[in-house]
Length: 154
Image 1 (spheres, rainbow, N blue to C red):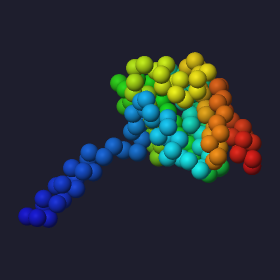
Image 2: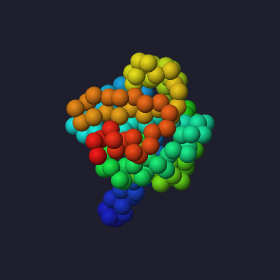
Image 3: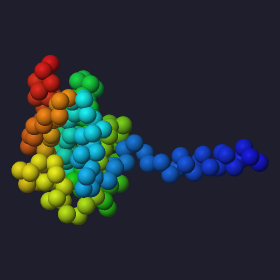
């Protein structure tokens, strides 16, 4: 009887845990949390959307970049919460279902963008490269693996 109860509780806990590809809600304050979680390591934070054709073409390249460089890669979808299931499916198809992912969860996206980069008007794709020392560099448009490797100093 006790084994069944323990098994049922464990099953409920596992079912309640989100899958890795489920985007975490990105709201005010998330940018600082993300930076703190990756402090001391270089990280590429890539902002993309389901409605951005260049973003969709570029997604599989981020999988390859993460594997080849050992760089922490974080993906942030700028799509609204109702599109999160599509975001998850898209990441899985691109082989990015094990990569840390977030998605905008605040309808006032201007405030989110301002926290990330005060000069960012929302153009996509956009990537913020953050060094191990915490200095950051924002790049709009496609970022190739060679660009990232050059930035890393490889």
